[in-house]
Length: 266
Image 1 (cartoon, rainbow, N blue to C red):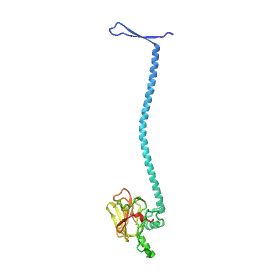
Image 2: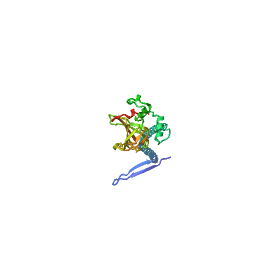
Image 3: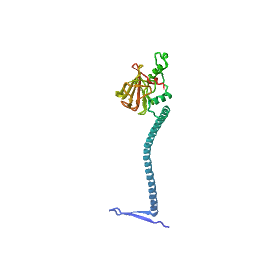
Image 4: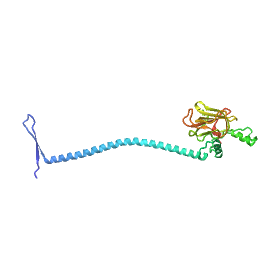
């Protein structure tokens, strides 16, 4: 079959010569195929380029989201760790208080006497009782009752006594409202607000020892009142200058600050 041709004539203006170009129809078919292939390849390339740009944009968002998730995961781990500590503390408190909160001082004192606090300080202070072995048992008991030897609140020691650092007591972190106990028998010397220490009670144990209980939420005693070891004298709080609920507990002997932890017997 004879091929068909197309002739294109170009006539320049002001020229006598006519330029002719002759093309076979086969070239037009090849051109059409080339254009179709070019359009398809270009479309495929543009589609994949847009897809890659979308993936890159999402990747940056995913990096940010992943960093946020890692931060949240770390926060959750810290919270779970704190919860574990609280559960352990709750279990210990339930063992001490027989799984209930008792407001009666005598009942709490009997529970404390029965379930002695499992506390072992790094150092024990030796108390000179001035002829202890010559006393009769009742006098000995009375003398011991005036020694501030019990933990005044159920909680965790959050800051220790440091004479060099100027922290003249022991901080016991505990939930607000928890009872505060008299560490020993004596006479209430002071009960009220005391500057940065907030609500404070000071007990004179009439043996050279004085104990101070600060940042309390409520005070449940008054000046010149006689208190016995284990009596509730207030509740844990955050009055005065504090960063959270705790009891600032201090002991002095003849005016000299002593480390309260060395006195804890139970």
